[in-house]
Image 1 (spheres, rainbow, N blue to C red):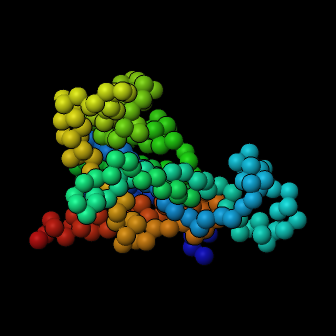
Image 2 (cartoon, rainbow, N blue to C red; image 1 turned 180 degrees about the horizontal axis):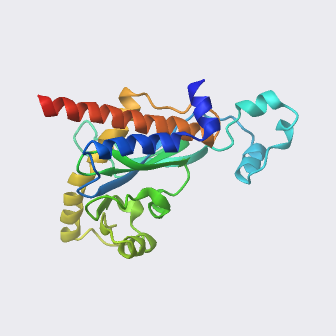
Length: 251
């Protein structure tokens, strides 16, 4: 199988970088700053006992799996549970419920950085769903070749460590600011966040494309195979984006 060969060869990273080089050579350089975000990618839910869950979380293979290789092959020990918070839908009378919805998700995350100029994915990484997305910003997710230094991201990326990292490496933070604890959001900060959202929203279209039209779902087992599938989805998006830009250029 093609994906399995890519997994064993560890080739998805170099393949993605090779296409990115082709983009740059064709004039599609990373420019106008970058937008960072992450999206949860669901995987089939595992039905494990509490003892098995504890062993997996501790990085061990459950004892009762060791003598059952067929079962072991079907168990994803790398995917994790997390909770996704989303806004509740308005009621029939138009009012909005006072609480957000908490939706449990099992699977992985796709972390990406896109250039604001052309909208290509320039950097990406895959982790389990429980990994803290803010930390990825300091782990190679930012593109230092972008012609502009601005970085847009939501509040998950707002931390002292990230702000210091960006300043030290020549980036200018446009990361959303969090609401002060125990206080309402100041009007000036609210307006600033709204302005940032107009830029940052572009990255959401990529995740919508991958999940809706590309039907991105992790049906493989393990982080290595999940990384290949996520990497291929990012590569395919860039290919489709290139075809779109070329089509409108000659229209």
